[in-house]
Image (cartoon, rainbow, N blue to C red):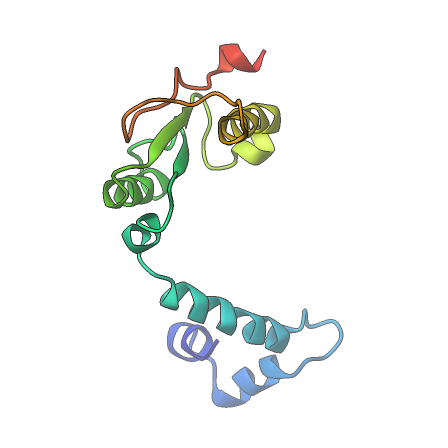
Length: 143
């Protein structure tokens, strides 16, 4: 809060202190600041994707086709994919970052299919690392 309010917005110390006071009607900015600190610490202390990736037997990465190769989500996705060579990539055609809101049934089918592969007797992908288990989950499959 200090950086945003003092350094970026140019608020005085008194104005910042007023924002830190939890009072009804102010949206409790002090509480929000306290909640953000542990989250920020956790993000900063989380191991890099390749470190986490070495600990997992199976990793499925899902990307919306509209984001693929486009900043910020597609480029971040590619960075993670390069770090986790054995990850399997699943592309949701026609989708962006908000698939869970825009096409929840399509996303649910993909998650069900991935979950079935983990159950005894479930389908195994048998695909090399980095390749999809089949065609992209596209708009035609969603119908």
